Length: 215
Ligand code: G3P
Image (tube, rainbow, N blue to C red; front, top):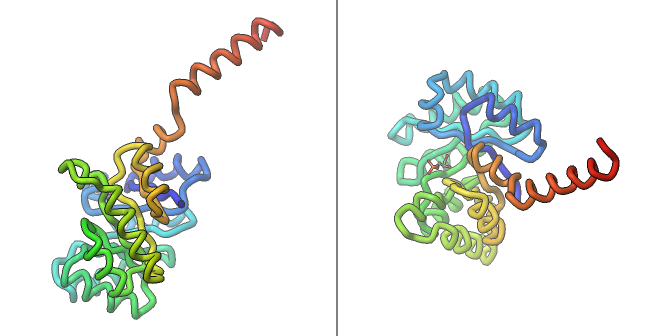
């Protein structure tokens, strides 16, 4: 399973890219608004930081507007993937953009039926939201598992990006459930690398070494 960073903070992305563990970036209107910087400039910068798919989400509400926005965003850089919300307009835009060879990421997916529609419309990626289902006491990972089972059973090539990730356990569960990608906030990426027993073990190694060799 690949890891993408779910962020529009170019400094976070730069730091994460230095670890050599992320293969792409996803953004959304909320993440872009939080940074307060121009979407196109942000996407252009992200594409220089990470050699992989950069998801940029349209904000138009009708299919025609989504298609126009998608074509403009795709022209920024070959790495750009157009993020479109699941729904009738998003599906119309997905099939038009996909037929033009533009990669698409259908987002805000909360059911297998939505994922299946997105795949049939030609989506390169589908993004089920794990955390937002868990927030409602639903089981987000079971959705990822169900989509993975359906896509495997029917030979569907769209890739599953487990999104709305809240913890390292969500990442592990998404990997076990068959997601192709987990897109993680920078905070979660840092948490993935850490463990209290690792810290304790390292401190003991260093103490024993210093006790024995004095440095
Ligand atoms: O960017 C898509 C998704 O990962 C955002 O999820 O629930 O953290 O806003 P959330």
